[in-house]
Length: 356
Ligand code: ADP
Ligand code: MG
Image 1: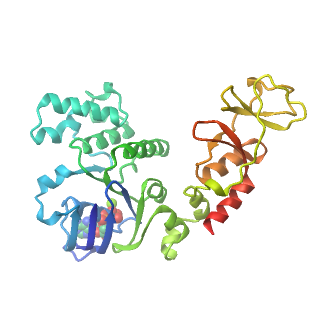
Image 2: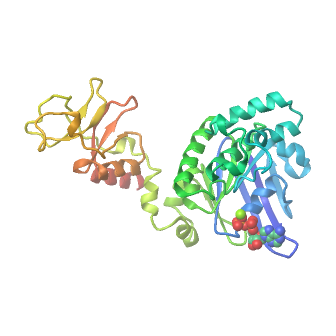
Image 3: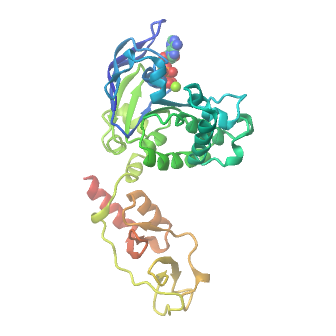
């Protein structure tokens, strides 16, 4: 648990960067700190590991008051990832990752072995281990940065715009990988970003700050999307709020699944329109158009349709229905068996019911 109690930071020139901030990050969750440039995100983050000391207020990690903890033992507990990774340019990738454990007294062999394991954890091939940072792409450097932050296996992780410096496609990929990694390691994380989509995607909770370092709203992504407290938050969260909120709704029992008779390869399609083809274990192979083929074959399957788990978010269901033939999405249960279809209109109706 990380807790801020009435934390303020006034810089020497009189700038109030953070104003009486109260925050709580439950153990094993990720808090995304988001807001416009200059609203005090970095200052808030750096007060946690004492790169900056607060002017007033208290920050605690579990039961530890950070102001009465020496910086060295604090940083052993707190991994830190920054934009552009901040790697040591004259050290190899593996030595970058092993640097802090070595400094803390680990021997060369075991710290190196552990560093190689961590590189694998963040998805970097072994052949990068002995290269220098400048020989890596931005996305690869960012992965090394994450591995380095995890090197002492700290319970807490601070991340300042960790994915901002890479192009959108790589960014999405790094975010997805990071979500999978966090599901395994369950660190207590504060991540700073100016990107509201990133905050909503990665945060268990999101804190929106406004200029002057004042907390505008703290809540889950769904709370921010469905119940912004004022126009600053609603404008920051953005115009496509309704559609984004669908990404967090699970419709489960509220969506009426329409039974749909499926066929196997070789079956006749006489008298059928769009039909789902399944394999011998009942798993969907694709849709086929009964008006265009007389029997089911792999060659005639619709190419772009997807099948979605019944537990998927409303947005995935809606995307599936809009992309699927005939405006329907095919659903599968947990073991991948085809269970029926859902029309786009039914997804929207169920989403409205859940939101009401
Ligand atoms: P963010 O990370 O949200 O962009 P920062 O925490 O970096 O914001 O900065 C918050 C405010 O504090 C800004 O107005 C910034 O100009 C000011 N600031 C940051 N560092 C200093 C400093 N060392 N001295 C004076 N003002 C600073
Ligand atoms: Mg910043």
